[in-house]
Picture 1 (cartoon, rainbow over the protein chains, first blue to last red):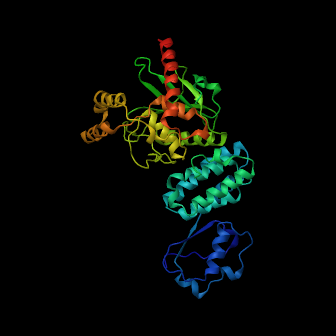
Picture 2 (picture 1 turned 60 degrees about the vertical axis):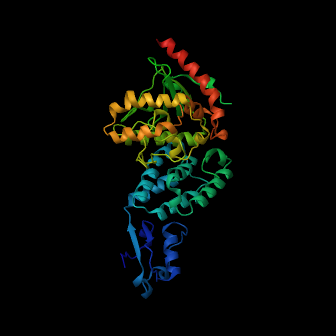
Length: 174
Length: 228
């Protein structure tokens, strides 16, 4: 076991990033999936006690849970709620800074999750920030899981907003 | 056809978000210099340009330059302005080699954090191309650029007259020397018209850029002559 921080507080769980370090993962897949999905925002309902209750299977789980300071989640919230130009300008350096920190840690899974969050909120987030998420990661896109799928999702969201993806995402689309 | 009549003498108030600025040097009109102008997040207009070896500058532009807003839609211009601001903060005052190693390809030497992805020497022109390439904007298809004897002569004289005086290592000089026989130069005016052109046509091939860039040079030389 490398390190384990038990996720016992659902309010705190959103501020935790779970990262598999490879090797044998012996915890029940359903638990890993439930916790991971909650943390990256794929599910919004509170985690059940079944999902967070320790069991024998966790003992050999190779996981690192990074506990982030709450300002990080506030920064990320500022990005996801930026819909106007002024807010987008203020949110850009936050997005930039967050991506930089993750890249310095080579945490490409977390970058992938961030882009996924942007794509899922692509109907409301300022288009500049959608573009920024893709363009700021473009140079190392081959390291980011699902980068192309996320790009395509963002292209769909831009299109549904009446924007031309081929114009906005020029150079990024095939 | 790229419309070069939209290049005008620089006026700060006219800058919307992100543009390209170019001038012919007054003392050597055959030498052009190019950089980018942008509005930062405090609405100040800044001019970011690679002036010389280890001399990236960010300050005010002036009417000796012609300029045009780049031909990208608004979100992308915001993005480019934001990147220029980051690069200015991170790289102005820090070493940045002048030379011919980065020749305008899709793999940019500077990353979006303003750090080196790969340390490659640049010219004022390829520095601008690199800004775009960092974020995946294809200005030009450099594989269509021709090797020109006049560009190799320019590179040789730049090496002999300038780079040997600023490079600290003979190895650096030798490396540039070896590049010259294969050197393909994207000239400042070619970068400027490619940045000005419309998005749908990018990346531009050389034949699309050549004519408009020659027209632009005539404008710049005439403007420089008026300044003298």
